[in-house]
Length: 209
Image (cartoon, rainbow, N blue to C red):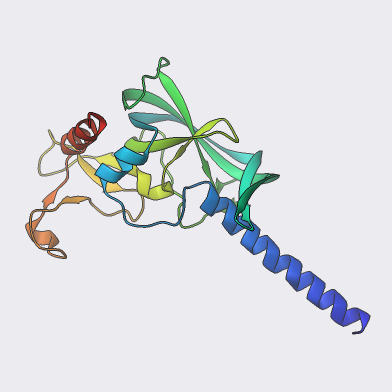
């Protein structure tokens, strides 16, 4: 094989490895592939559940210890990735007592001021002032709270224009309203919108089991 062909294969092999490496980072640190999961299951699996409001948001490139699955075991690699940190004012917490009034949550991905960005299937974005419910796990490699199941573990709290006293829940995963099943599948018109209080009742019930 001549030199030009060797360079071609080397370059493309490295590119393919990098793609799989980044995918492995995302999969490893969000507990597996994104699958549909109920609030009951999220509560059961999470280490901590919070109701809070975003106080500040910081997006920057940071050192990060990634866990990559190689030959059936997890290897740790230090990398530089785009990270978004949400500083959150707590209103309620479940499964653990948080002694501080604030908590920081990290998620991989975001948009940097210089125009660079990184998003993926589990990425979610919250605005400053946004009220939300999140199901968290403790990332021991980095010493940070992160969201279990990525965007599927975050629910935004929004006003219901038809009933201002009962805020409703919107999924950060797809931006759709979350419905409480009261009819056959795929018949959302006959289902009822899940309210914040109903979601908190589910979390509290599951926490006591």
